[in-house]
Image 1 (cartoon, rainbow, N blue to C red):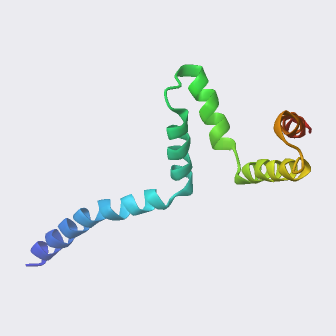
Image 2 (cartoon, rainbow, N blue to C red):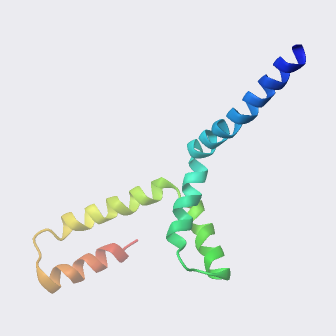
Length: 97
């Protein structure tokens, strides 16, 4: 009788274990970042893909926030300009260090 209980418990645990494993993989932010970078890599192959993935995975969210703030700053600086004049000023602003 004890062997039957042990076997039943082992079977129940074996069936439930994959469900728990899937939850921990989905919750891992590094796995999500890898999936996002993989999707962005598209059809890149070889060294080009390797370099892209290295760059993508090493990027930190602060870098993206910095770029967004630079766009906001340039938008404010060129607010009164129109057409080609604004386009040129935006370009120069974005290139500035």
